[in-house]
Image 1: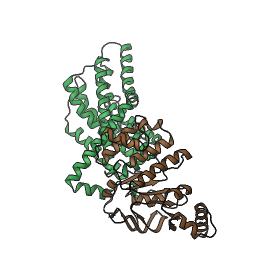
Image 2 (image 1 turned 135 degrees about the vertical axis):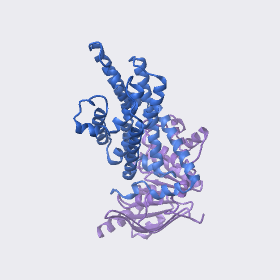
Image 3 (image 1 turned 90 degrees about the vertical axis):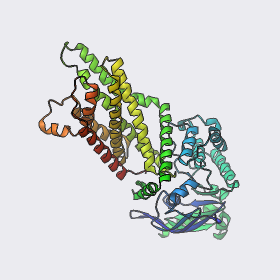
Image 4 (image 1 turned 60 degrees about the horizontal axis):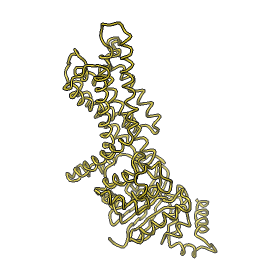
Length: 246
Length: 271
């Protein structure tokens, strides 16, 4: 693989008359944590779903792990990990059974020991026999993350992975992301928490109304703004001003 | 979110699979593993399966009670309705699969499945297969209940042959349940549509009023999937019933299965 995990060139995507993504271009380097920031309806999740092969782009070029997403969606799906905005768990399967089921869908016959090890990575081994309804919000998010790892992906997409979690649970999830990053995996995440982006991401892209407003390291974005002290101030400045202009 | 073609079955993905024999066997293997996992999950949720059984068992019990209070002699109504009640057990599987698919869509589980490298259509077939197994087992339980608890004449050889027809009957109504799931956004709406369609078909197609129906309604009733199922089940489960030939009801039921499945696949959406 080249040094790029994701290459997006002039991506466009509409839903009927609504332009969700209006010509976005960006690259994600292999091994980095890349954050996508933006208000609700900015086009972040749509962009992710195109990268994941769930939706087809109307225009532009999208390459994931060196493969064209239009013609190699199945091969890409085999190699990426996905955690969706909703935890999307089967209500009547235990945590362990969910891991085993998802692994089989990826063609991996993992042993019970391997499945337990995966749950251990997200600190859920003690909840292996629990149904999703018996797990807290943070535990459900961690289980969803374990499911995103069943195929040992080199590239992981996380769509608002810590939404709704309390600060303690959020920090637990951050630590897991850091460990995944230390293992050399690439992470592309969307988030509404600017502190999260500032703490975890090497680079961030700020998106609003389907357009890319800024892309750089969090510090460089802060430095480039006039008199702003934090990423949050710059974000509000960027998205607020641009939204009013359109 | 506006509905787009993205949420439908991706025919290009299906064609890519069909063109490669290796990929076909791989998809079949993963679909079967998915089916087995769902069957295991349904074991933990055995209460739902038990509740589905409650309706046919209650109908049989009510007829048994009514028969006790009736004057001796004449045709046994219990004997007469037994095949159609067993058929109904298989048919109710359609409602279960419909509720399951709608809740998967609502809870985002379909989207999770769509992220996996297996065509989503194959996994929906897996869900249908799971329900077909459960519904057939439920129908067999009703046959055994009829024989042991109700004292109905159940011949093991005929009952085995009837099981094959019940599988077909279950698949037909599971395909119908999938079609309703493709068209409904809420399980409550889908449930109402399913029962509003199934119950008239059940009463028109069973032994309930078949002799007293007006000619126009009779002409429609003879082509209903419930009538076709009963036409195959009656000779096997109802003593003295005449065999009127398998070709018409069998091919009719197969046409229904194909039509329901094709329409369900056309209208299916994962979001």
